[in-house]
Length: 424
Ligand code: PMP
Image 1: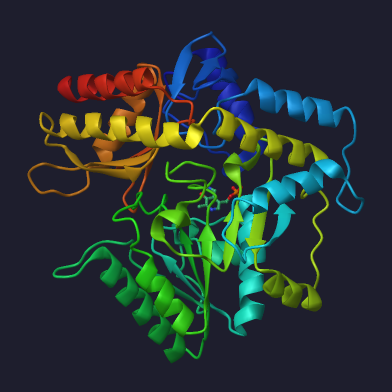
Image 2: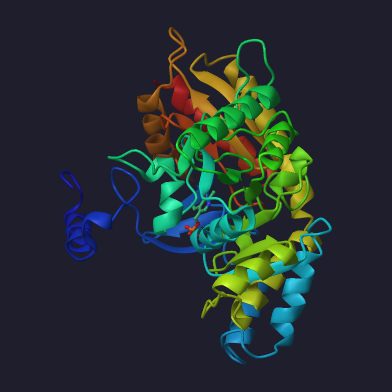
C-alpha cells in the first residue's frame, strides 16, 4: 500500500490483519464501494463507475422490483423448505417451465459451488463411475470436490486422478471446433480408463468464462455431448455464468448448442445478489441420488430466495432482457471489432449476448499480452469503468455487464478503450 492516501493505507492494513491471506482486493488502489444502481456503482467519494463485469446483479444493481420482493418476504416469513409455501412452489414451477422436457426436478442451494458439488454427486451415482472431464482453465466452485474440477484454482499441484483435463474449445488445424472438442473429450475418456477410472460426467460452463469466453460456433458442444453419452457419462451444464439470459439466445447457454444436459447448475444471477443457486435434473436421477444419501440445505430455497428469484424472472421477461442482451451485445461486439482496425494489439473479439471476450496480443508475435490487459483494467478504473480479465493467461478482457447495459454505455466503453490504447 505504498503511495496510498494514509487513511486508505490504514484501511487496507486493517483488512489484511483480520482477513489474512484469503483477502483479495481488486486494483492497485482498492475502491471503497458504497452503493449501486442499474449499471452503475458509486464509491465513498461519490465517484460513479460503469460496471462492465458484474454478472450477479444481472437485471441491474439493486433493481427496485427485486429489492421490494426481498424486503416484503423477509418481513413475512423466512424459513427452511420443510413446510409448504406458495412462494417457493410457484418459483420452482416457473423456473422449471423454462427448461426442456425431461428436466423436471429442481433442488435449491445457496451457491454455484454447492450446485456443482451436488451435480457431481448425482452424476457419480447415475453413471456408477467416478471420473470427470473439465476444461483447462475452468472454475466451477470452492468445495473440496468441485475444486478438483477447477483447474484455475489448483496452484501447486496437479488435479486428482479422477479428473481429466481438455483444452478450451478451439478449431485445430483442419478440423472444426466441434470436431476438435469432441476428439479431446474422447481422448480424455481413454486417459481416464487407462487410470482405471470410468466416466461420470463432462462438466462445462456453456460459455467457457474462465477459459476465456468461447461461444461460437453455436452448436459446437453437440458432438462432445454424443461422445459422453456413448461412454455412459452425463453432461453437466454449469449455467452459473451464461444462465438467466446472459448469452442473448434464451435463458440458458446450453440452448445455443442444441444439447439437453442431464444436469444443469445455476447460481450468481439467480437472485440478482441474494445468495441462491440450484440444480435442475431428471426426476429419476434425483431419485437415485436421494436413495443413497438424501439432500438437505438449510437455507436453500427459502421463501426470501424464492421471492428474489421470482422477481428476477419477472424483470427479465418484462424488460425484455434476453433480447436486450442479444442486441446490445452484438452492437458492442461490432464496435469493438471496428476498433481492431486501428489497434493491432486487439486480437480476437468473441462471445454471445452481453458476454464478450477481447484478447490483448503483442502485434509482432500474436502472443497474449497480460501486461496490456492489466494496464487497460487499471486505466479503465481511472476513467470510471470496472472491468476484469479471464482466460488461461489473464490477457482476455471479460466484458460482462448487467443486462440493463445500454448502447450509450457500450459507446462509452468502446471510446474509453480506444483512448487508452491511443495514449500508450
Ligand atoms: N461455476 C462457475 C462457472 C463460476 O464462475 C462460479 C463462480 N465464479 C461458480 C461455479 C461458483 O459459484 P459460487 O461462487 O456461487 O459458489
